[in-house]
Length: 240
Image (cartoon, rainbow, N blue to C red; front, side, top):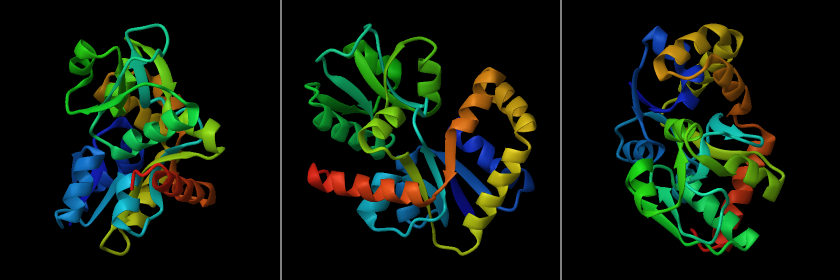
């Protein structure tokens, strides 16, 4: 059976043991691409953008990618020192982040035009001063550019709830339980995983300890509430 995995550091710890055990064929891709693959029946299990979960009416599983405050890897970076009214280029890899910042823009009264592009960060910043990026690209961008907005932090300030960026969906019973089991094993063996991740992604161990501890991977009551609030606000803002 083939299951999906975000091709980012944020899925490394929860999937570490599952990949090592070798029971499943695990395919890495962007959140948006995983949603497309799941819809086409190419995957029997995958985390997908929360926006796609809501849009398609899928039943959420327990595994998720969320943060209760700063997420560090869903951010607006800039060549400037502050966020002015200039347009913000946005990655097309996750429609959750794109629509979340659309909501934040309206709620905060920001005047920036929001432009969805397919290019990488460097390409976006050739034409725009500000850019919304996700995943590993965002983590590396933090080291080169000024961070003007962290969507995990912005969502917490706006709603008082964790920001849920991705939620797992499945056509097969039992896989979600195995992913959660792998996640819990990973938390107990985080030192081993941080060392491997540091070498693989060329990131400092100190940062990875902090990053892994900031992520939420089990969909609890607050996270489910946040998904409902996101759904309501998407409808209110005519994003669904």
